[in-house]
Length: 250
Ligand SMILES: Nc1nc2c(c(=O)[nH]1)N[C@H]1C(S)=C(S)[C@@H](COP(=O)(O)O)O[C@H]1N2
Ligand SMILES: [Mo]
Image (cartoon, rainbow, N blue to C red):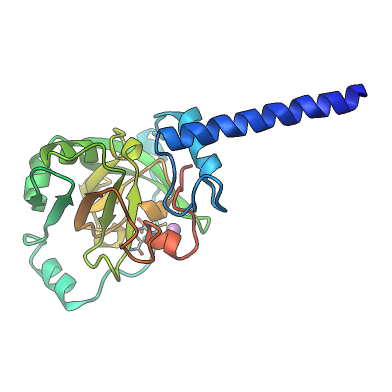
């Protein structure tokens, strides 16, 4: 065997072994995204599992106050349906965030109740998959706190969350590593005030380690579940249903 072919054999062997290792770890730790089609499927399972294992729980970058964007871009139009407009006219006093599924204490939380809970303020970057981005300060309750109040089963595979109409509105999901990360918050404030309606007010999920589409605006439901098969087109995310990747880590 020539040196060259031996080297090739060795490198290929190492690559295969590394791939197999990641694949084994992926199934051992349940690191299989719902849009993957499995470890050997056409999706990005290996990238996902490798990112998860290599990055661990590393935080998204946080910025100093002077980096806050002067004119953050509010993407899309706020909901214009009757129900939303009446919530808005009422100052969102009747808005509720439901927390259900694999929990021992289902919750229905008002904005006032959420505002009394421990909160975290963070200046982070929101990046849309379309290329634009901005930096803002968000204030919110760590999702981990809300899940603890609900007695959530942390062995559940996904936290699914959505704007009011889960089948027709926006929805997304994350795994438990993301849900329990300290920067994943249910945000009710932005840049020193209430969360503006253009940016998802009265409530949005803020997931700063992921692309903007995971940060669902007009947040109304949180469900702990082992399966996303029955929701939307079954990919665990309205963005994934539309062709983007379920795993949007940046
Ligand atoms: N309910 C809802 N949430 C949403 C969206 C939306 O259209 N509806 N757009 C998503 C996308 S694609 C991005 S990039 C961000 C944009 O957040 P912004 O409006 O604060 O810029 O919100 C995400 N959350
Ligand atoms: Mo986006």
